[in-house]
Length: 355
Image 1: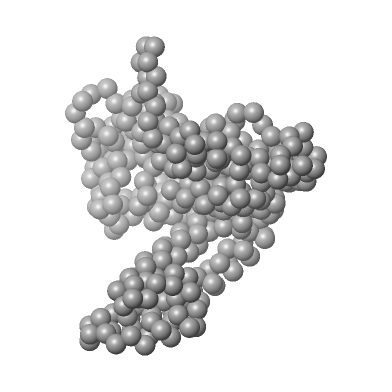
Image 2 (image 1 turned 180 degrees about the vertical axis):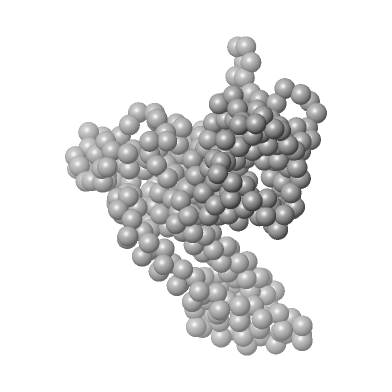
């Protein structure tokens, strides 16, 4: 077997190669993509099994496709965990490739979960829709600024027929008028595009049974449910809800020593998109469920609005995880907790884990 440790960069890769049959050791620097593709295609023609190991990278999709086409085994490890096993203080591309090769030979290279190609493509749908909405929001904010500078402050009414007619009727300087026209044209182009993307997200969520189950929870729509299913991937990857919260970066930083415990802001590891969607969905849940609303205002008074929002997002993520893992929909049941807003019934999950 040929084992290769790869230190991957967008423009090139440094490799450390060991042929276990002959004991031959090589080090090479391969430029992307021509030289690297020729090298691996030449290895694939030989009658030997090839195993490649590398750190997780966000710019190696073409390389993964190439190895899958050539039926070359690919191991991908956590970059932070690999770095923690580096003993020397010096860091070069050669040493990084040698370290990965050494860990693979010692069977100390822990592989991370990799989503399927279909999963990755659906994630592109979510990210594309998210970026389009962000762009539209920036355009709308600029048009609001134009209206306010002309003495018109009508907030959401600006996007109705009457508000837009008022915005277009202002007499502006030549370049200010050109800016207003261009922004309105961009807004008209983005609105149907976002509507089509929203429809595609809803269709994909309807096809996914797990996403449909999560959508039964108040405040969770097709976008949040589909994003949760795609990014979490498999429930058996996590043993409890706390691990899900840590995976999504919804737990605080900790630098404790001795008898002193020091907690900081949340780690913000994992998917920023899903973290954003959970915070938004949790606000809808707070408005829908009295029990959540009570806990939210309690945290709000103690820790502030931002901390309370993140705490409710963490609770929502754990609730969705257990609904998915236990294969239980959100149900209307009698609750032992009575509130002034709902003296008879309250929305509760059929099974609420303690985490």
